[in-house]
Image (cartoon, rainbow, N blue to C red; front, side):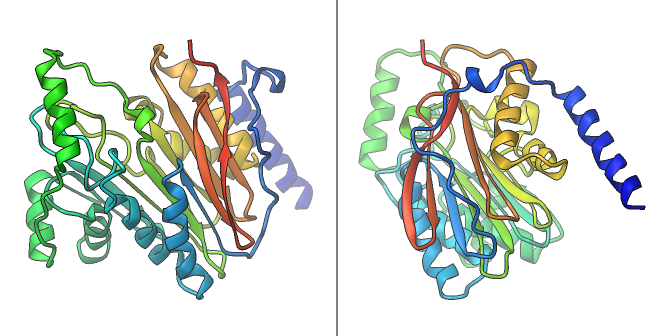
Length: 333
């Protein structure tokens, strides 16, 4: 029986490799400036995207260090950038769409596999908490636009003016420049925050929240609130989250793909690299495209990789907070 299981597992690995063959070797990959941290199985830990993840991780760490649940940790963690007016790609202070409206996307996923999401939500400071209400209080996964706002207000959330003077000035500058509708991925503003946590019980949860592309077309929704694209959690295997140009992530379901790679035996680092490789094969990679992936498995092993240089991720592990430069495939032209 054991030999049969080994044979089946080996056959699956071969099948996956044939579906997603590497076209670059380790020598082609630009390594992170700080190595991947060692596994810490059974120890609480938090990982998140970009430098604003450091403050988010601190809030999440307070919860898991006190014996709290990963689900609570990821929600409270991303509350920090959602409420920070200086973070111009998430929540309050986020750069608006082409009509000057701040619209938010967010999702959350629990160890149980349950998930909730809101898209194109306006006037609410913490869209991730609305997403959690969708997950826990409805049979649905996604609520959008006016329906999501009505649900939030019906559940006690209050309207907030999310357009700060700084963000409004940036929008007015863009508008007065005569620029036609041609938003970029806003990666240079440190983009989406995706946060993954493991609690003392070894349970995994994740959250992802963003204000999306600067000056985007009204109604545009990226990968961040889409389960399997911007975020995916399988408590038996691991979790992954994405940042960068959402359209490319949506076309390849990057976070789900990474978890499936891990399910078939890949280390999180290998899985993130394989997902970037898959992206280069599936979509047209333009000169301004950036995508970054972050992953963790049940052993507490971490992976991070980006299409281009510049992606950073924050790690809380063994009582320490660190900001790490991820490996990448291409230099910027």
